[in-house]
Structure formats: C-alpha cells, structure tokens
Amino acid sequence: MLRLLIIIIMILPSALWAQVSSDPTLIYEMATENNVFVGARAAGMAGAQIAAADDGSALWYNPALLTRIRRLELSGTLSHQRFFNETRFDAVNTIEAQLNKTRLSSLWGVFPVPVEQGGLSFAMAANRIKNFDRIFRFENTPGWFAAPSGDGLGGGEDDRGSLWAYSIGAGVEMSTYTSIGIALEWYGGVNDYSYLDDEIVGPDTYSYRQDLKNSYSGYSTKIGLAYSSGPNFHLGATIKPPTVLKVEQENYQVSSINGSADSDYSTGEYKFHLPFSFGVGVLYTIRDLLITGDLIYTDFTQLEYKEGVDLFEANSDIKKYYNDVVTLNLGAEYFIPQWGLMLRGGYSRDPIPYNFYPVEDDLSVFTAGFGFLLDKTLKLDVAANFLNWTRKDNEFFGVGTVEKYRAQRVFLGITYRI
Image (cartoon, rainbow, N blue to C red; front, side):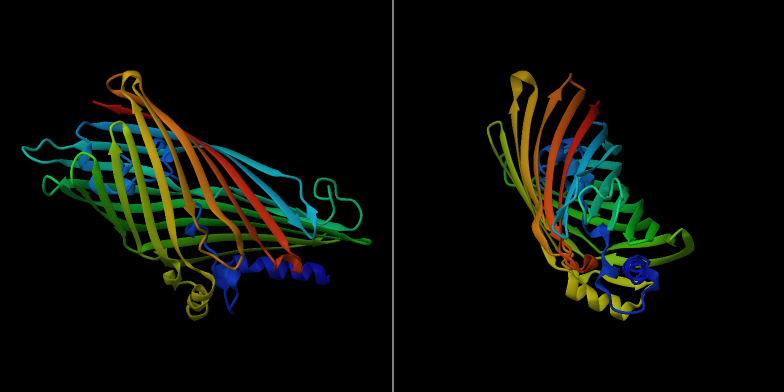
C-alpha cells in the first residue's frame, strides 16, 4: 500500500490546476521546449533563417524578409520522426523504446503586391512549431516491463501531439536597404499524455494508469527587421512579445491493488504567458556559398502564470527552476547553378530551460538537406535532422535515473512559384 501511495502522490501533480503547495514538477511546461524547424529549407540549415529566409517560412522566422519574395508562392511540407529512448533506472538499462510519427508540418502562401517602388508581400501559414511526441520506459529488473514476473516494477510515459501556429502577416520595404514586417499568430494544439506503472511485491500486485489531455490555445505577435548593406551581407532582427497560452485539461486516473480498482476523472484549465524573445541573424555570401547564423535569447524566469493555479507558489517556483537560454543556429547553403541544386547543412544548440531535471547534454541538432529546381516554377526541398540530449531525474522513486533521448526527423517540401 505504501508503494502505491508513493506512486499516486508522484503522479497527481500533473493536474496543475489543483496546485496547493510548492512542487517544482507542477510548473514543467512542454511548450517551453520541443521546437520544430519550420519549412524543409530551414530544417536543412538548422533553422538559421532570421537573415536568410527566402520563402514563406519568413512569416515565422522574420516577416520582414517576405519582401524578398516577388512571385506568388504556395508550399507544403511533410515530416517524419523516429524517436528513441534509453533509460538507466536503479542501475538497470531499460530496453530501447521507439515512437514513429508522420505528419503534415507546414502550409503557406505568399502574395506579393505589385508596387511602383520597393516591395510589399502578404502571407498566411499554418506551421507545426512544437513536437510533443515522446516515449519513456523504466524497469528495475531487465525484461520485467515486457514480461512481469516476480518482485519488480516497471512503467513508462507516452506523449503525442503538436502545437500549431496559424499566422498572417506582411513585409514592406522602407528603403533600398531596410524592410520591416509583422506577423499575427494564433496557437492551437493537443498533447495526449499517458502514464503507466505496475509493481509486484510478494503476493500483492499494484498498478496505476493516467491519461491527461492538454488542449492549447493562445496568441502572440512577431516584429521583424531586415537590413542589407549590399548583395553579400544581410542582417535580421526579431522581437516576439509574450505569448499567451491557455491550457484546458482532462485528467483520468485508475489505481488498482490486487485487482480492486478505483478511478477518478477531473477537468480544469489555467493560463500562462511565455516571455519576450529576441533574435538576431547575420548572412554572408561568397559567390555561390551562403553562410548564416542566429542567436535567440529568451529569459524563461519571466514565464508567468495568470489564472487557474496558486499564483504565488507557481510564479515563485519559476524563478528557481527555469533559466534564461540562448539558442544558437548555424547554417550553410551551396548553390550549383548548372544542376539547379542547393546543398545544405547546419547545427543548432537549443538549451532546455527547465532545470529541476538536471540536463547532462543539452539538445543538439545536426542537419543536412538539399533543394532541387524541378522546373522554373517548382522546387523540391528535403532535409534530415539528428537530435540528441540527456537528462537526469534523481527524484524518480528515490533512485537516480538517466534518460537518453535521440530523434531523427525527415522533411519533404514542395514549393510552387508563379
């Protein structure tokens, strides 16, 4: 009975609206991480696009760059992810867990407006900006999770879902060298979380199941600036004001002792604001070689809960368990004109801001890709991403747990320009 009570006490904090005391696990928000590159070209260049975007993904990265697009553009992107987890729990290496998912990733349209001087372009898009897909497994005896036998315990977590940004915006040239842009963004998405835990102690069997559904909605804006000192050197900058997110939750739990089960269903909602984010980018070209880099700063200690929780406790814990982070994106593209081929590569380091679970290796992403001109109006873009990170959870059942994650993402995009 004591073990089952420990399990329930650990899992119940997932219902954030019920917060009554300080607990760092209550303020863990998946929307502070799990970023996805928008567009297949950007995915091949590690998302380094604040100064380099030349397609409809500019609406997300820097709307001022929409002025570079002088022809009607329609584009769509599919993505496929293979997610892997290996966990060391109580000195036992759990068998590798895997989760695969194929989804629509982006849709956009860019509509240039004929003007006598300068450039003006409008755009609209639907982009998957957060990927919540995740799998995690643990066991204290090798093979126990797959075939429970004798004293032992095992379980795991599964997350599935995405956060989408639905955007409209425009970019306009203010002078020969400078353009500005703005995007209005609305957010929607779902994260379906499942937790399971089984245990056998002598003649007794315990089990616990939880299904938690988080439905997201919200809004934000983005302001962009672009400057060109000539054909070879470009600068970009963005400001993203606080993002308002509302989360509606449905929580279903079932616990069982020796076959006797109890269940509980509850609902609730809360609201929080993600903080300001500031980005700068630089682009330099040497003949057919393009080199670009971005820095994005976000102070997640300024994340703030507004409704639905114990505001004093939650906002105090944010100062303790979140960091400010700087995301680094580096990318390159080499154009081979006679083949109509663009070769791409990049590297991104995207730190995880939540520090209650110590991060041994921050999220690193290596990228590669290519673009190919099928004809004068049609372009194919392909990209591959390779992600790795490692974190610890020293609170999990009172034993040290090391969680190693890696993922592989493939993007396929088609762009049509008239």
